[in-house]
Length: 526
Image (tube, rainbow, N blue to C red; front, side, top):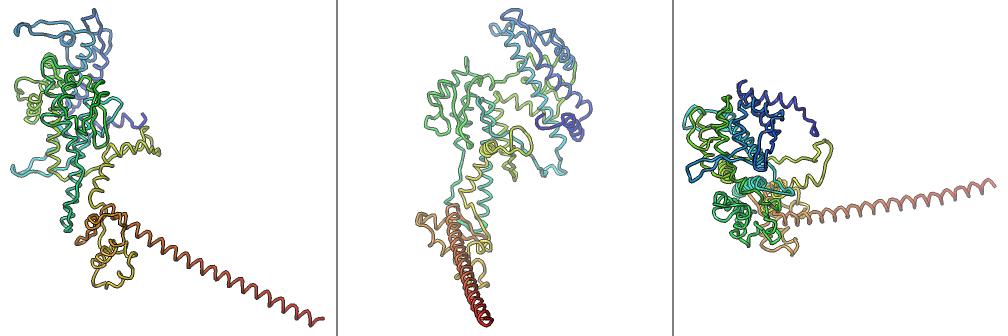
């Protein structure tokens, strides 16, 4: 493996983690059994007795392993995957053959539904194990949660899955903006700073373009998913008609429309989406025949997975109330998009009730190797993870702040005489006022009067600066320091030059004296 991960070690850690979460050995065995059966199922193949018929390939060694692990019969699996039923006149059922291509798609859907049911079971069981019951029914227990979400995705071909992942990232970015704004606002209010003129970037229009009642991509997709005779072509045509053509977030020019594509301008940049198979993906229905097939299993765990997938009737009570409510929610949510939107709304509400902290994880390279830093890979991640957007959010307010003492130490070089004249008893606050008032008159005329008045403000304990004023102050400070440095260098060079001149004069006169002395001595000897 490129990432140098030991699979055996990872598996041992998984088993240990399940043990810590109090999964019983039988539960672990059942989970592993179904996981392995899904991998065998991915290798199943079909034969085609005719163009409109299909059959399980008995020569495939994975078939018997899959049937044995799942506790299913070959005939039941064949009847479910290779045939389908239709209603005639609303009453009589007639069974018809599936083509090989449709049987393969049906098998993929079956595997996906098994995995989805097991995932629901795992999440519900883990939530039970880690939940804390308060001693008082009215008292709510404190908790710490960790949310690990996919990063922003933009591939060569982007589909419904990428839109939902980017929708989640867009929502999390809005939450991040709100958290940053809230923390800044609280500090400004605490310091007595006027922040009413500050406008923070808001991506609500991007969220509305993706998911909003009426005219949004997911709303139109949900409306069209169960309309009679709907297909991807009708959906995308309806999308182009109903979306706002003046929107800066949703773009579909003639070139995009010819390819049945559109562009969403996300916070991290524009992403082009293909609408191929969106109707099919959004329905994502589990046929009743597949649920019945799981119910016929000799394995009790597989039968429980069938209950999770049940879309009609009430749970039979063998599962806990939390899982039952989860099943009920799935029954009420007709499409994948609706279910995703509902879950995201609940997630945002839950995060909004907490104090969130954000951690951005960045890979230095795609090879997953140490001591290898790829600038392009890192820069792309900084953009897609919202770090660049976070910088823009920070710069929209007072991007720099210093305590009065720090501000005085940093900028007293601008007015050394006046700052020294202020007695220490008056404190750093008085010195800050002197520096602020005097430095504003020294700044470039390119800065507007309004920006000068609002761009630097003195709080009760800190001095706040907007980016433009901070840059101007630093330029003034650097200019003073450079001038002082040049003056010091000039004085030093003058002193060194004078010393050198003095040394040369002494050397010159010393040689003259020595020459005269030698002449006198020579004259006496002669």
